[in-house]
Length: 379
Image (cartoon, rainbow, N blue to C red; front, side, top):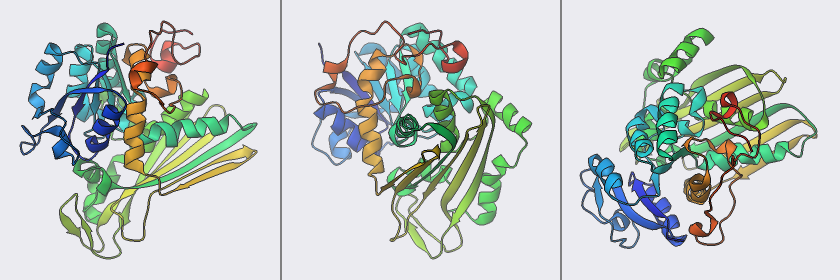
């Protein structure tokens, strides 16, 4: 089998790992793209602090022409956090039959936050034979880890999750989405105000593609579909994390004054027809010297189970998950096919091309209808 060919879209902090991990798993890097003029023309490996890859970074404006004239199996997209902001690049992939995996958090399960963009890209991808999905840290640590634990539980009444991460590790787009550096008043107007609306108002925003979800909004939807739960209501609330003293942010290139937001906590509560509540919280902020990443999930029922993971290497885990997902994406049905419908991610001992095979059946392993997975597919 030929080597899998990959392009990297977005040559920032995450790409340092996605490109190296892919190369070390036998993937051939054939292109790299960015909007930063200072990076264009430079070798992709040198820009990200690795060895020379002999692949020069091109302007993102050249991306569509490149995928139309080169053999590209998969694009790894590591830029922003909202699917509306990725509509252009994902549309290019979908139109041109290029599979894509993105670290965009909303892309993990965009059906419940931006169905307008999801349906558009899904249709184009099905027509061209491409598969588009979101993956990363949440795929394992907020998704499949929880569903595996649920599989060892007799009765569940509630699932509670809490995860924290340093926005410094992910770049300026994510830091801004979390309100880092804003005054309390600005946070209230720019970030929190979006959730001070009725359920009906939120439903209208979602239908128009104008809703801004926190990361757990999409995670809760993913978990419900994975566990076969039917959502009756879902709410979210964003609360600023306030600096107790001046703290410097290298990503924002500024000192955040005491009293301003270093980021935010977002709590999403989902009620289901089956009586199971999912309450998940993510805390993203600029850390002080005493803070570290943490992931805590508790399944309440019979029996009760709690898992605590301290200091996960969130960036590296995100990137490794995406690269390990490449074979599943290449084998999945065409469309915007979210990962709760794919096999659980697993360690790839060999080069990734060894795991690619033709798959005629639905890869989710269940009888699916259009309402649940977005595709007319049966195992």
